[in-house]
Length: 312
Image (spheres, rainbow, N blue to C red):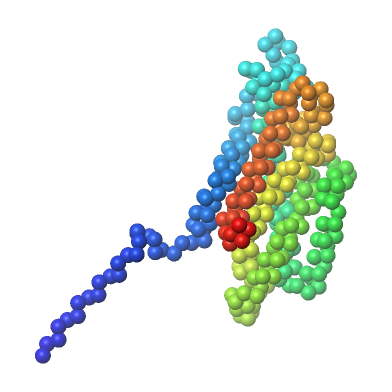
């Protein structure tokens, strides 16, 4: 007797539109969550425009930031109000405020980014070593971090700045090497949590070297919260640079920064009758720091949405 052939099974019907059953990767999931944070998206766009303007300052600045502005009458325009030739006016020396604002953005943003990178690097390395090795290594490094954090950060920075020749490099070094404690604590806590996971225990049981385990298994998984801390570190570094330059211990004239442009605001005359000298740099600092904070909030919510739901 002939047995009829069994017809091939029909493929399962899709449960939704094409691609809906595909596993979503962490990067795609994070980007989808980040897009829901409208303030973070707007802040990222504003920071992108500010960064492009700072980089392109030599090409878009209407005047040389160090040259004296010559008015229509052929004389130097000292503290001239905004006009068609100088959209943001001129300062007390006769230099174009808009051009100095653009060039000052290059300095202030560069100091914020590089100083935050130095702080994140130092704090992450120390936190990684302390959290992984534990024991006396953890105790020594943690006590050192506690000792540094005991002193008020701004006063410690001001004290050291008064003994060091002020320059862009010294400001970056001072801010970076005195602002690593938050990154250290965050990295140490992440490593202490990750060192007990199955894959780290397996790598240790297989005899993996310490450097490889830290670089391959611990550091990549501890990076997301460090990224959020890095954004907040940039905002803090910009504010610290502005405070140092405002007090005369940061970036020195004639190099322009948003902080030393605000130094003119110490005069009552400037505050009361020449607002174009202090409102542009003050607004630039305010908007930049605010946007960086909103961007950090968006990254935090996108990386760790569970914490957001717990707060709500």
